[in-house]
Amino acid sequence: MKRWVKAGLLGLGGLGLLRTALLTDEYLRYVKEGMRPLLIASGVLLVVLGVAEAWSASRRRPHGASGHGHDDGHRHGPEGDRGAEEGHDHSGVPRVAWLLVLPALSLLFYAPPALGSYTASREPAKTVAVQDEDGFDPLPATSPLPITMTDFTQRVQQDRKRAIGGRAVLMSGFVTPVSDGGGGWYLTRILVSCCAADATTLKVRVYGSAAPKADTWVSVTGTWHASGALGTSSAAVAVDARSVTKIGKPSNSYMDALPLTS
Image 1: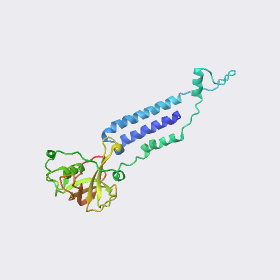
Image 2: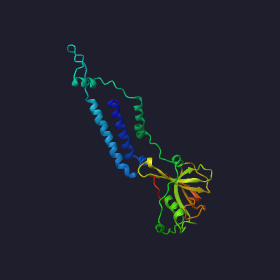
Image 3: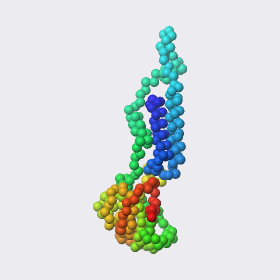
Image 4: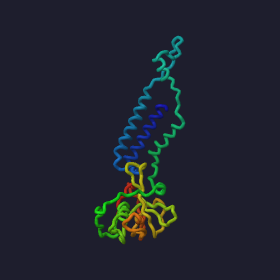
């Protein structure tokens, strides 16, 4: 690949990373918040490498013919061969290499959307950690009770005291349609440990309310949907909805956070 092309790609990639990490919150679509300093450092490094490559290319002198005697510019020996090789670089840029321009430009002008219902509908729900019986604290008397989807799943399937039974709970997430024909829809959260490549999915099935448009962020108030034995793994991770309210998408959507309450 020509050196000027490499310099341009390095510079574009670095500027794209810096724009995404410094000027917007779009980087949260791909990595966790703690990765921001590494993105900034990577962007700076790519820009520096691009500038260095451009400077090196600008100082490179072509070796042509000398015009003396019968020496046609191709000196023999190791040094002559090397000079000829440097002065007569006929290598071109492979066509497929130009495709690298597209992701570099996309970082500058178009950020791919965050993972949503398309991904969630193709992933099984994450298996939550097993909680010790003594690890469940008494639930506060607040009604409806703000709760994360992880805590709700653990309470429904592991809490032998069945404290969640009959309690009105409040959770938030985005809408994912169901594909098994059993009715309802999924309230969904996508979690990442490091970046979008290792994403896992949390789902709570919602009954009793028409499904909003896929990927719409909503808060749901409801009670446990009585199916299976509460406090055991047979209990359905589902709610009967009392109300569904559209909310704004949080800036960091890859977290199982408590819903915001007024």
